[in-house]
Amino acid sequence: MKKNQKSAAKTLAILLVEDREADYVLTRELLADTYGDGVKLDWVKTRDAALKALASVAYDVCLIDYRLGKWTGLDLLREAIAAGAKVPFIMLTGQDNREIDVEAMQAGAADYLAKDDISAPVLKRSMRLALARQQHLTAERESQELLKKANLKLSELYKTAHQFVDNVSHEFRTPLAVIKDFAGHVVDEPVRRLVQ
Image (cartoon, rainbow, N blue to C red; front, side, top):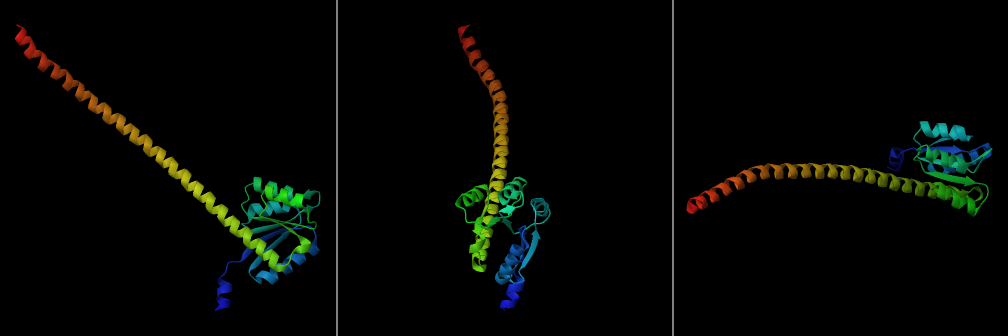
């Protein structure tokens, strides 16, 4: 039964942006230890290749090395988010640097992991939390969109109601003016007879 449940689970699509093959192999092994066949891992070495891959494939998670030749993972992170990428990004680095950690989180990374501290359980936890955060953000965006549509509909209904009240008010004023004028004649006529 467990085997069927595991095969029915969704395969995670992961993009690894890493310029060193040794780190790619290590990450691939950690993912295999954690998820077995439940992972589809794409590996690119450059910022440009990563931006192209992110624009063409719907990844569940993107793991980004901090050092990418003349670029940094932060550069890639910012560009990808500016281009509309909604995937959770996890920054990987060979150095445990608090400033880079904070900067990565401020730029939109879901997590920051020092490569020396990465193990299968640590990577699994980081990815689980990143995916949960992304689901929350997606639900929040969808709720905001629904709220925006509901407010627009409410605004349209308000305008329609306002127009209706204006029209009804106008339609009532016209006959009331005639009735008032006629009532004035009715009252004036008996008074005129009395005066004569």
